[in-house]
Length: 70
Image (cartoon, rainbow, N blue to C red; front, side, top):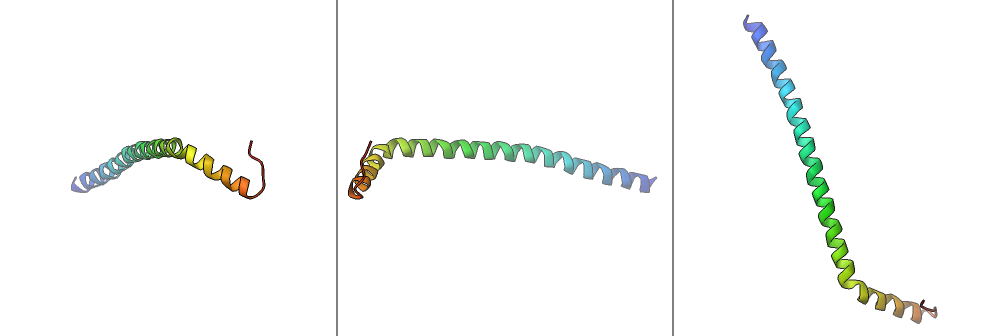
């Protein structure tokens, strides 16, 4: 009887870890999604804030290389 109990406990432990892993994977996916969203927001804010300066910089580079700007 003790041996059967030990086998059942081992099985429950293994199955319990599998369910925990699935929950962890879901949480990790949500965390990565939030991280990607945050990075996208930072990029959008940076491009918006620096857009005018970058446009001026690139236009001056094109002009100094002898090209025409649109």
